[in-house]
Image (tube, each protein chain N blue to C red):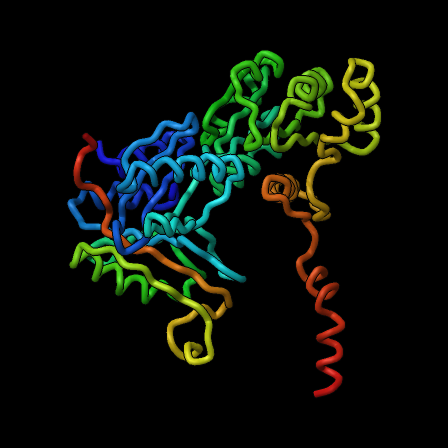
Length: 109
Length: 262
């Protein structure tokens, strides 16, 4: 969280839309644990990480979609036989990544 | 102010909080902050759910564990994430090893405080990146410091006039790590004197001395690395050996069998 705070605040000041991707579940030898974050700006800049680099590309594509639609989504990555040549975790393990638009709107009552 | 802004503010100021977030279909993105005193901000969408999650959030805060939990009676799935204040490294003695040690600690996200009554050693020119410099004797300085499991104390002066009061004021007070520099001989003598001042053997055993992991470090930078690596190991509950050795200990026979038969 702390490591992506500067980027969030900088992009917000620049008026850019932002998506936040958070590892919410990690199993086996997944390289980054729960709470790891990757933030993406509408122009495709990215700061932070959710894995050792194996799935960031796919998360980026999804994050840009989320910024456009405004709807959060859950992504799952695991190593399986038919995924070896696709997007997967070379390091083994499985992760779930929650991607949402930066929930910045609306004041508390 | 939005929940998100409050969360950012807490993290930026190093204030502990538990972030809880619904990651399900029925209320995606609903979130609530739970503060260490049990108060909460925001809502996950149902008062009864807020109630249960608050309790779980406090439990996970104590255990410092992040996880996603299922609440089938509410068709809810909630990511619960305690965000603790950053660890704090307090260095007694603005000596030469302290300079690279501050660099390593800052890179690892620690807040760093230098304590040394000698302003020739403890000053901004020598430590431009320290978060705080306290030019006081250790027993006075610790009155300004919190001692928690995320506080690490390192004693570096080599001067018994400073080292010993420093040890006395931090040992057995609940810090996550206490280490002191010096040879084995220095320590034997130091501990003998400290015991006379009423510290128990258990208190003294708690001290990482001689300090640092066994890296055969020679330069001040290498020694600082050995100290920092030891602090990370202790704070994270690691053992500090070679991972390779543990691998061969547990997997060695299986791999040897395999390579012989193929």
